[in-house]
Image 1: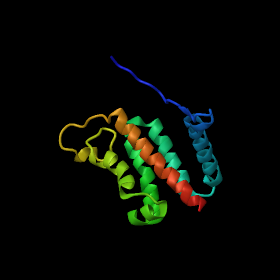
Image 2: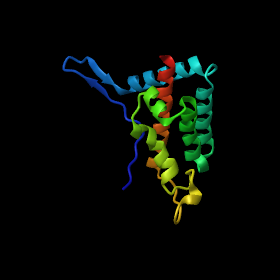
Image 3: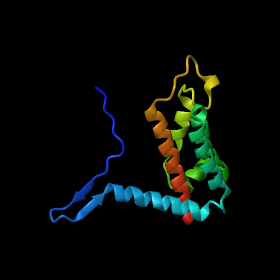
Image 4: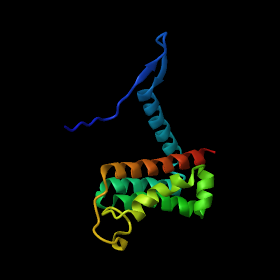
Length: 150
C-alpha cells in the first residue's frame, strides 16, 4: 500500500473557539513576506539576483539541480568573502551552511557537483534529498533577505 499527501493545513482553536494557530495563514503570510522582500531588493542587489537565477536554473535543469542549488551558497561566499563571515552575518549555524554542501559535493549523486570524484556507481538523489537541498537553499535565501533588511 502506498500513501502520499500534499501540504496538510491545520487550524488550532482554544476551548472558546479562538484561533490559536492557522498553518495555511502562516504559510501564506510567509510567502507574501518573501515576495515583498524580493521585490524590495531584486533590482538593487546583484547577489540576490544571482541566487534567484541559480534557484530558477535548478528547477529547469533537474540533471544538474544540486549544482545550481549549490551556486546559491557560492554567491553568499563571494558576497561575504568567507564561510565564517557568511555564517556570522546571516545568523545561521555551521550545520545549516554545510547542508547543501553535503548533498551537492559529498554524496555520490548523479545530480551532484563532483560526479567524477565518486568511487563506484552514482545514484539518483532521492526525492527527500532533493527536497532537503531545496529547503536548505531557500532558507539561505530567506536569511540573506533578512540580512538585507537590517
